[in-house]
Length: 83
Image 1 (cartoon, helix red, strand yellow):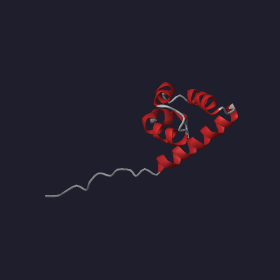
Image 2 (image 1 turned 45 degrees about the vertical axis):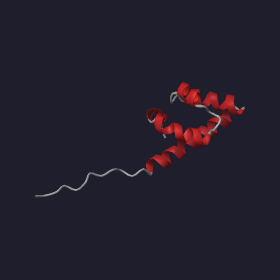
Image 3 (image 1 turned 120 degrees about the horizontal axis):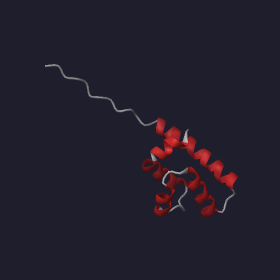
Image 4 (image 1 turned 135 degrees about the vertical axis):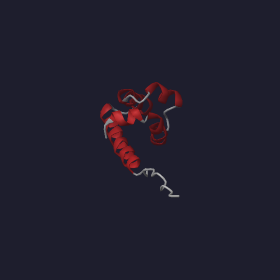
């Protein structure tokens, strides 16, 4: 998935981010503001992991978010009523 999509849906994504990385605070998420590099740095800082590990976790998250997003049903217009 293109990170621009996650950034554009950041408010939706924050719930999934908090579920996956519970050490991130609301203030962290506000500071990250959907920026991939900021999230990458926070993961390294909060979890004490190397950049390649954080990259791997982010790649997994992108796939998971894309899968979850693609399962959201498309709303349909109600059928038109004829008089």
